[in-house]
Length: 351
Ligand code: NAD
Ligand code: TDX
Image (cartoon, rainbow, N blue to C red; front, side, top):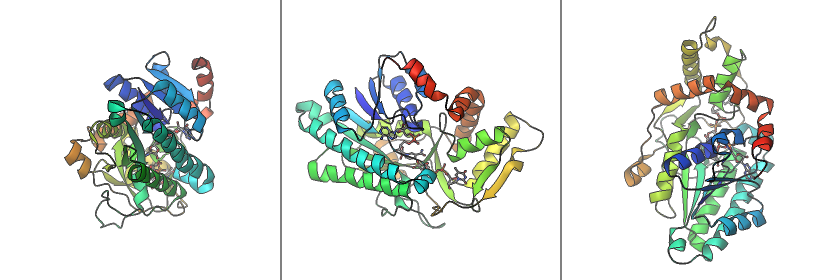
C-alpha cells in the first residue's frame, strides 16, 4: 500500500491510474477535492478495491495519523498542492496553507509513523515530494538549463510556497533522517488537465470559438513533459532514488508559448477543420505579473543515475493530448459546468 496525496488532481490522478496499471499495488488516495480535484478522472477505479479514496485535507494531522495507522503504507507520494500561478497571484493564502503548512503536517505525521516502524519496514519507507522547476526562478535566454544545484530563486507566490515545502522536506532528511526524495519537474501536459493551464485552455477555447489569450509577447519559454513520463519518473525515483537527493525531471523540450499555441492550432486545423484557422483566435493580453521568462531542465542526473528517459517526444505527446480532448468533450463539459462534483457524490458515496 502507498499513500498518495492530491491523487484526484491532474498529475496525481494520472499517477494513480498508471500505478495501478503498472505496479498493481493498492493506493490510499487523500485529496480534499478542491476545484482542481476530479474523481471522474478515476471513474475506472471507483469499484476497484485497490483504490481507497479519502476526501480530506493534508493539513488535518489527526486524519493523516489515522490513515497511516490504518493503512500502514510503505511510501507517501505527495502531490497535493495549490498549483496554478495565476490563482496564487490573486489569492496567495491558500498556497501557503496547503503547500507549506500541508507539507509540514505530512512530514511530521510521516516522521512519527516512520519513527515507530522497525526492521525492513523502517528501512524501506519513503516520502517522495513532488515539486516543480519554478522554484529555481527565471533563466536568461542563453543560460544553461537548471541543474539540481541551481540556487532557489522563486518569483511567484506559488513557486515560493513550493520552494518553502522543498526546504522543509530537505530539513526533515538532514535533521531527523526521514527517508525523503524530491522531484522537480517541468510543465506537464496530457489528459485530464484542468482547463486553466495553457495547453487545455487553448484547446478548449479554440473549440468553443473563444479568444486564445497569450500573455505579454508570447515569448516566455517553458520545458514541456508528457504527464505519463512524469509518472514513470516518479515511479523510478521511488524505486531507486538515493535518499535525501533531488532529481530534476524534464523533456528536453523548450518552447515559446506562442509556438505552443500555433502548434495546437495547426493540429486542430487538421483534426477538426473549421472555416478558417484556429490561429485567427489568438489574442495578445496583459502580461502575468512577475512572469518568469524561461525555464529549462537539465535532466541528466535522473537519466544517468536511474536510467529514466521520457517515452514521448513533444510531437507525439501533443498529438495524443489534442486527440484526448477531442475524444473527451463530456469530461471537459463536466469540468466547465462544475457537474463533475455531482459525479463524486453519486459514485463515491460509500467511501
Ligand atoms: P492540480 O491542481 O491539478 O491538483 C492538485 C490536487 O491536490 C487536487 O486534486 C486538489 O483537490 C488536491 N488538494 C489541494 N489542496 C489540498 C489539501 N489541502 N489537502 C488535500 N488535497 C488537496 O495539480 P497538478 O498539476 O496535478 O500538480 C500536482 C503536483 O505536481 C503539485 O505539487 C505541483 O506543484 C506539482 N507539479 C505540477 C506541474 C504541472 O505542470 N502541473 C509541474 C511540476 C510539478
Ligand atoms: O491563458 C494563458 N496564457 C498564457 O500565455 C495561460 C493560462 C498561460 N499563459 C502562459 C504563462 C506561462 O508562461 O503560458 C505558460 C504556461 O502557463 P501555465 O499553464 O499557467 O503554467 P506555468 O505558470 O508555467 O506553471 C505550470 O508549470 C509548472 C504549472 O501550473 C505549475 O503547477 C508547475 O509547477
